[in-house]
Image 1 (cartoon, one colour):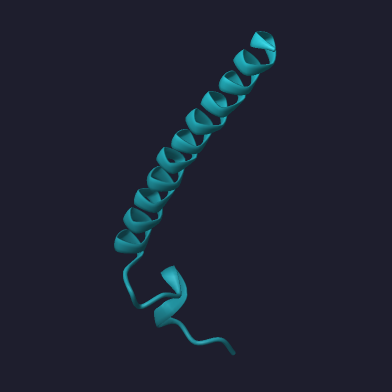
Image 2: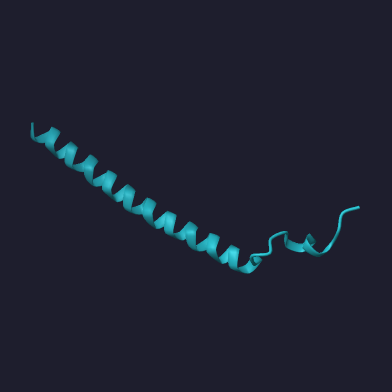
Length: 54
């Protein structure tokens, strides 16, 4: 019984640690996306925005 309780505690602790790490990964990806958005600008199109296609 004690082993089952210990395993349950370890699983819950591991899940909580994993969820916290996922939050950190999500925040890091959001920061990278925001930096890319600010560098590209809101106009979109990138390098070809001023050229017309024939």
